[in-house]
Length: 52
Image (cartoon, rainbow, N blue to C red; front, side, top):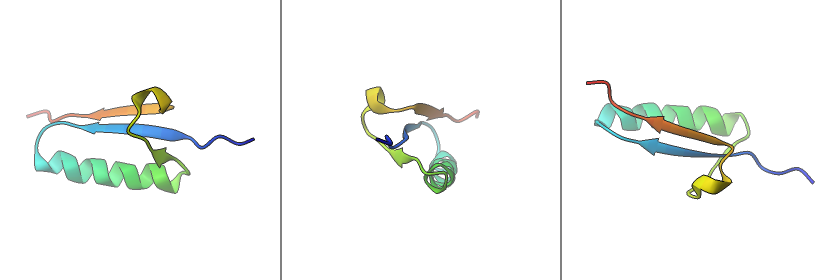
């Protein structure tokens, strides 16, 4: 049984971060991952923050 690889993405900060997170999510999906709202189910957790 193959388990689907899942990621959880948290975006904090400015609207530019939203664009970056959308691009990253697209890359992860293209790599076969699916988004999950459940942190405990995620193989990968990404926190995207603003440096300004």
